[in-house]
Amino acid sequence: MAQLSGKTALITGSTSGIGLAIARGLASQGADILLNGFGEPRAIEALAHEIADAHAVRVRHLPADMSRPAEIAVMAQRALDERGGVDILVNNAGIQHTAPVQDFPPEKWDAIIAVNLTAAFHTTRALLPAMLERGWGRIVNIASVHGLVASVDKTAYVAAKHGLVGFTKVVALETAQSGVTCNAICPGFVLTPLIQRQIDERGARLGVPEEQARRDLLKEKQPSLDFVTPEQVAAVALFLCSPGAAQIRGQALPVDGGWTAQ
Image 1: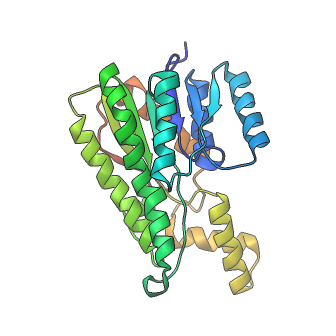
Image 2: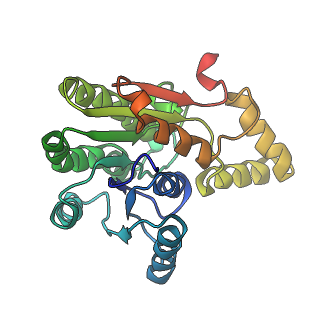
């Protein structure tokens, strides 16, 4: 029997990448899925039908711009009205911009903090009470290796992800005597469109082939010299939702090819 049958999961930023892999993974274990994210409406509808048909679960898309608290509130209220709340909340939505701090556009700072950190506060604040009332819940925050260490030109991202790890710890302590757990996953380099752009820019700047640019990027940080896959991150999220993880609370789990072991 699927271990999450009867549960409902909301995954922010789940129309592509890591979020989509987590949505698929949770659906494979029987959870009904509430997708969130940007994209062409027909493509999102087709994606929802695909996941629903593959795993015999209910799948809906709840649109909300995660930089806008009012839209987050509407999304959360719809989940409460339609499902009585969610059992699993995965705060995954994220954006990035890189520049030295003196050149960092203030509007980019504000947007990154809003989506990567503040959105998790709003979703958790809205959906945690129903979890506590039910006596069971899982909050999984997708942080980053940059929630544990820093890199140049990423002031906003590093600040947001460090903040998300701290937020995770506080929520875990506040729910420690309940059936709700809160943890963070900290991936290293995952080959997403965001990272692919960095590879392309590096290749163009240095005049080297894409494969060399990719390997050189990994060599700087990730000792395995291999990318983390979205499916590997999803597998960790699934474990955190399992009975075996019931006493894992407030942890920031690196999935980083050895990055933070150095």
